[in-house]
Image (cartoon, rainbow, N blue to C red):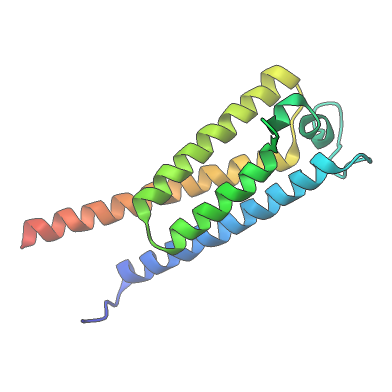
Length: 153
């Protein structure tokens, strides 16, 4: 088996680790949000009337059944990290799509239901959006490379 060299191989390896690092950052942000969920004191992200993590994380929307939404975020980001590390590009893309839609739904609740934004949630939304775009590009690059190889065979 020949070892590939050059930019495409380096990009593939780099993308794997970029998604892994971003997913671990997302899990860390979700841990901070979970800490706010269980804390009863003044939150460090309580900035003003429009930015208050405590209001968001103590609302009825912060739970799905008996599970905090932040705990779902931790699990989702860890799954994304695993999928990306395993190079399961399409599964990574599908999981990132589901995570983005879930986070988008929560953002709409913050905007229109609560009228207050959570800084940790906004950071998480940004992270999942970046992971979604990167995973789409990563999957598309694989698809195009396979299509090109089939055409040249």
